[in-house]
Length: 311
Ligand SMILES: C[S@@+](CC[C@H](N)C(=O)[O-])C[C@H]1O[C@@H](n2cnc3c(N)ncnc32)[C@H](O)[C@@H]1O
Image (cartoon, rainbow, N blue to C red; front, side):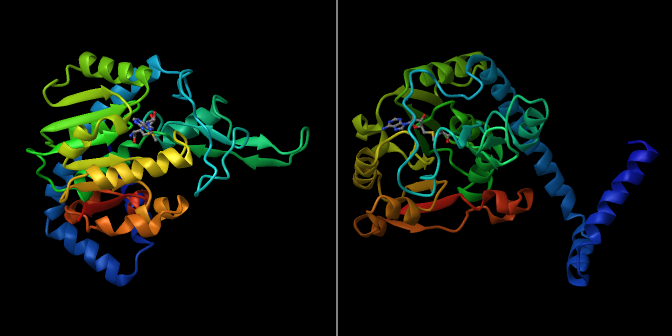
């Protein structure tokens, strides 16, 4: 590090310190003086190494899927209920968070590859911001799931991602956890091909990670044998009736003691589907298992992730 960059780092540190009150400043001073931050720095560097593996995989996927990461063979329909019911094909655009993080989105907007606004009233400045949605989880969310929410030791556990799409959750489980078995189930064949291509190109251990091309409703056996089930919001992919059927199916087949991870609260999901009463008693919300690792995350970015146990 040059002298200039030391000065500029001190500038940035002082900027941060200037925002703290006396108590907060004392706590930070104690933390640095105790030198425990050194151990945390080591952990952070290890996490960055794992994250770089996901970045590389993302770069490969960008070359093999369309820019929007949606396939011609898919039927994607904006939902009619829930917190995304205001999305439609005019005001909404898909930018996959696993492939493009926030900094990359800013760059895409700068070079004009991505538009952030749409015109409400042609030829005028009366524009509206587009809603950007992602069908995949971000690298940040994946790290939070495996480094904060779930227990650190998953060696003898089976993880199941329902609707594994590009495989983001599978690669996250592979690099951020020691999970013994990682299974993705995806109804779209083109996406299964993408996942299998990545597994083979990156020589991921076939005994540890696998993809099943099926409707999850046909594979109660796979759901029954999972210890951790991860479900990203399915609203754009199934109609209300099928969505309800899926939650009844999960309630029936997910075994007691399993973990369920969702990126929207179950209370919200089930109330949007008008099925709260019949369904909420089978799960309990859980505290994160590795709270000591929260230090590595911007908690606000991860506040939409929920961990439950099945009663
Ligand atoms: C929101 S994406 C989730 C992607 C991935 N789990 C992640 O978080 O990065 C939902 C995926 O579920 C798939 N899907 C929806 N219903 C399904 C079903 N009944 N069986 C299998 N896959 C399904 C869709 O094709 C879509 O790719």
